[in-house]
Image 1 (cartoon, rainbow, N blue to C red):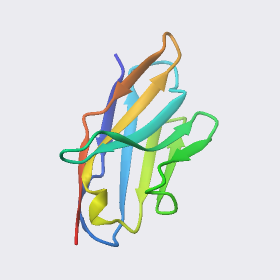
Image 2: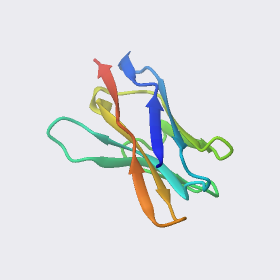
Image 3: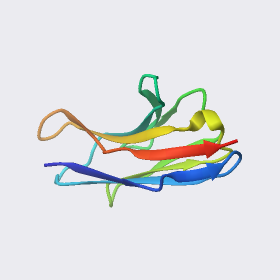
Length: 118
């Protein structure tokens, strides 16, 4: 069974930085896509950034230029470097890992809280 373990959330002042990590374990296959989504109170979950196995990345407009997603394929770990944080970035951040083998499936982490104070 695939498990995703996230770390790195916390409380930071506006303008500060945080780095989130998420390690996927439990499969002999590497996820084809890994990413981060977030959900603020009273709002729907939204995609923040994703990265494919080959390195192609995708970002939400609201974080472009401030956040950087990367992955270590040998460790099946994805990172999200968040700079110039704003209070509106406050949310629970969820890691996801999408697999094609042995069957198509999407897994989610438990979530990590990021709070940005003004």
